[in-house]
Image 1 (cartoon, rainbow, N blue to C red):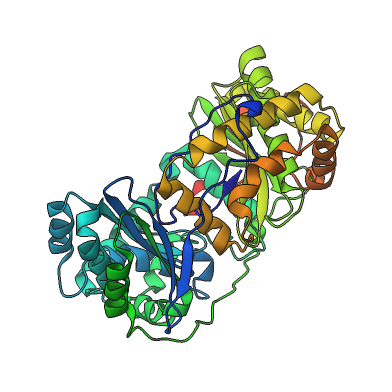
Image 2: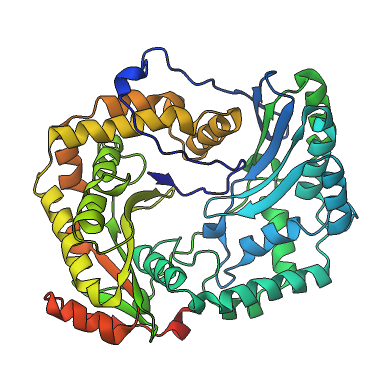
Length: 469
């Protein structure tokens, strides 16, 4: 299960592991919760203080992401995040980088669908300096015209190379199709041409409106003197003002990317030996009560090495090196997807078998042993995924932003443990809307279409690469 806030605050390596959940004491396994307070100006501060290691992570999340790009100005949030990394407080980007590197520390500024994150990681002895750097980045970015032009040119150049990779093309078009009609359809940048409409004034305006204390949360994680750190926070952020922003809600419906029933979208990339395949459909959102049962269903289908799709498509039929299913959650949207690649002449076989397995699951063809194995995988891997304080803080922050309640951090394992075969069947029956399935294939259209026709797939629509750029 993926919560689509991939860049929030701390980098987190998700470790996959299986193991009998009987080995995990569900009753005593409890992750710590932060101490949360709010400053008089509305800034939320979450403290995860721990003395075990002499390191600290300091990060701020501004809860305005790419979904909040103004109308006709896609790319605003991405460019804002990029400009935060190009100097602040009158210091050039190189000078800021030298200060960070002189401490042996690291920093980042990044954007995703739900927010912009700015953070520093370093030694505890440098905590106040790192906090100061975060404060400067958040409140006093330089916004120099030359740096803006440089970053806009770099973003445009990278975007123009989207068509160089079938994997990138298939993922991009699938996102456009599955998120059509939502505030997420534009993504990081709707079209490269949008950059020509975007000026430095737009970024400054967005920063002024959205970088306000009531729209942000500051995370302090690791070994710090809380009393002294609190004084530093108040000195840096106490004078920060601003009312809550009005956030754009621009839902986009693009007929070019709206797949009709049983229609397969094909991006023609002649000469490629492989085809990249994406299959999926919308699912209930992250607040759906049966999401843990659906997580188990997804795991047994295609999340781990011995899942159904891998055993059949990869091992038995030899159609792919790997195939994986996943659940992706945004605040206001969710979807299930399967991703794989195969030799172009095998596209029809792979799609046929994948759809067959989805239909079997929908028809309640689920074994109790499969459910138990998937629960063991999810429960056994969870403690490893939250084995550091930074990882715990990341998971807590996801729950906080998605408003999942105070028990979110510790409810995963017991709720997965309570899943039964019957609840898996019920969740799949409700969530698997196979009549709304979207299929995207990128590769040599001539070979792909021939392979699809051989397996009875008849409705195709070619989408030129240039229409995606």
